[in-house]
Length: 542
Ligand code: FS2
Ligand code: SF4
Image (cartoon, rainbow, N blue to C red; front, side):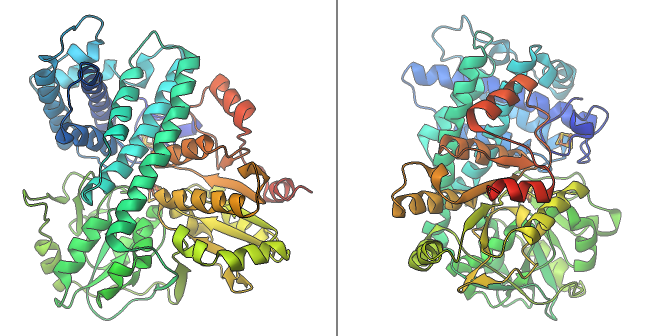
């Protein structure tokens, strides 16, 4: 196996024996094969579009779900992965018949298999290292990882009935381009930046889906303690799953708690009507071994990030959507679009209530609509000098000790600075009680990682209010933490919007070759992190 798609990759180089995330070599190979056949299908659909044919929404959806399935910590179930690969080949073989000129198609578009054994034999030859040129490999993977993140956002939007032909066509065109040996570094750099444009579009689409369905996030205080009823813990990112769960638990005596990236669900008006929607339990994904244990009740994983569960609570872990883990019950969507969570609810009734591990409240809900409602207050605070700087500290949390930098950084920023956050990175500083500036909290949480879009909207609005030409003339610094591939599309989106001098940590991606890293450094001023003291000085221009 060879995988270097996430920040925790072994030795900052690549996982070759097994994944730091718990992914076995067999699953890594299965995912490589799934990506390979998905690229093949994408080359076929892209050729069909060129012939003027329409690609069905089911095919688009199949492709984005395949990509989502291979995101770090989403799906460890090789039966599911190989079945999806086989289904992909069936769809592709059928569509291939319609291609008028098959000459010049990549092997991935014409290769097929009839069973898992054949696919398993093929898998080791089609992984990341199949591209020999280090820079081309780096750019192909950078694009592919960005598309994985974008696909995750598309799937969430799809669940709420939102879709975009343009974005699907781009995802497939770009996947097909990563197979094309005639594309050199310059073309791939251009495609990387184009991915950022579609990243912005994808996040905007999901923002419309979420706010159009559940209302605009608003300033909310979220309980982090526990009640006396048994509970279900819902993790991951899918708001539709949460809605279905809340509907089905109403009046059952079972409470629902959010975990990790589900916390921002509390900020949406539509979820406030459920009396049994009690609060948020625990922290970011990587602490789940302890927190799922002490929660006592069932856990529903709607997406990544799954940490391979301990036997002591594994029978209480359920998966749905793109997520999966062998031995954990997977709840499928029925034909009518509903999901039946009754077995989770019945199990919850037999469980002890959650053990309280924290108490108090955290505050959030500062997506674009809420912040813009406070715009006068914010602009005034900037004009009077009460707020001197905004730090965008969005992204992911993770297990490495070096991430304590972000807690220390948040504590060390001057008292007249405000943190704008989104994603599970927030757990490094959202319980520090950093106070407020003239009533504006010093940590403004916009929501999930995709709500980084909100932070961009806010920055663009401030640029307009202050009459600036360039977003980089604002008193905003970007100090982003990354872990998995959704952070890659967020980064590419920020670059597309013209944001410069983003600091990325705790380490730069292993999949950036020295030359590709240089392009990002020279063109966009991307940098890693240093010590807290040095970085604060640098950001404050001292
Ligand atoms: Fe955190 Fe994991 Fe949100 Fe990432 S819960 S690292 O999926 O996308 O963020
Ligand atoms: Fe390693 Fe990350 Fe790949 Fe898992 S996802 S195998 S930890 S690089």
